[in-house]
Image 1 (cartoon, rainbow, N blue to C red):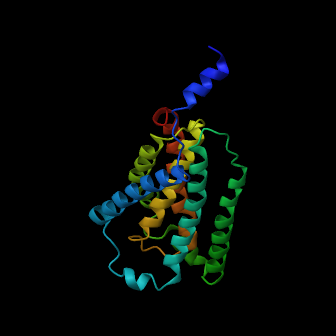
Image 2 (image 1 turned 90 degrees about the vertical axis):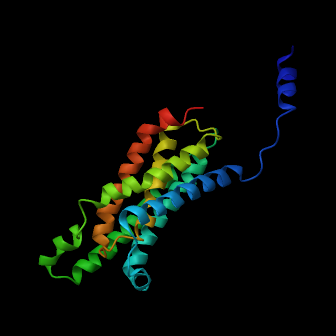
Image 3 (image 1 turned 120 degrees about the vertical axis):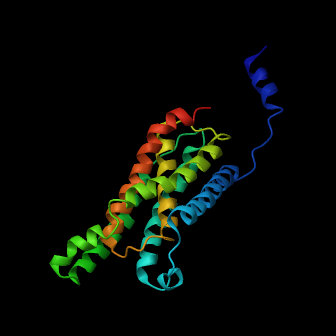
Length: 213
């Protein structure tokens, strides 16, 4: 059989993929994972008893906005890498923008605080636990993304795993705001980012094994 004819015959029964199907699939996986993470927070850590009051202060929105900005970039990259075509990730330098902005906020906080209080600002009351908590909260979201990838076609598995881990970690940090009482930008920049980075690193390790198709 002629090669072109064979290709045409194989393609005749292929149904067209709905527009935005990849984004919807990723969104479903994220939603399922996020719901499980919220349940985990409620059962394991508990929600802030002063949550309504906290939402009226800048520190809550500082933490949430920082995490949300990282999550947005990571989710866009995840959608790109879920497809078999080549994806350019050079634009992900924009991740540095929220980090630099948060660092500027941290410097401003330090300027308003006596030097002997800087260490307390940086470490807070939970620096030892924070990165590990963010990492654990990211697990259900990463599992949800793995479920999404089961019907997708990534080819750069390590990069796809890394950005999926980054997305899971950043989304977990967003949801951790439901519990976390820390208020310092330096704390968030250091320990939230470390937890998110750990999730990205584990995603990079797991991607080649768990995202094969």
